[in-house]
Length: 96
Image (cartoon, rainbow, N blue to C red; front, side, top):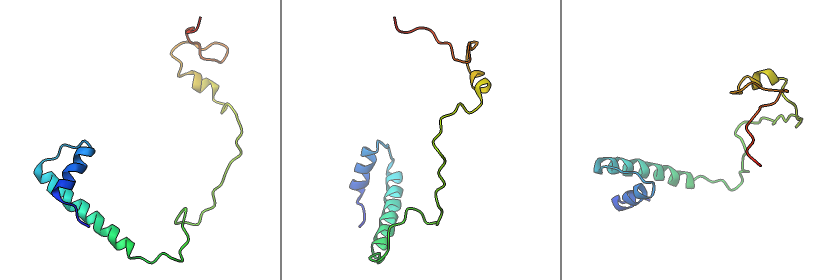
């Protein structure tokens, strides 16, 4: 499959790209190369191949989902633009 200049113009318009004629020609060549690679992939026999979630056999290590404060109260409160009180951020009242 190869793209026509009109199709490249439509793709550029849909992607909201403003391309010059030279850029459209270059984009057409690049997109046609990509479609060529896709055509090559279609020729590969994958009938007896199981889908992979990863190309590397690595077991996912999960940690327990435990809530904690990270033991960094002082460091977190140091980001406050005002002086923290009682280990909390103090913000202006917004609800009556």
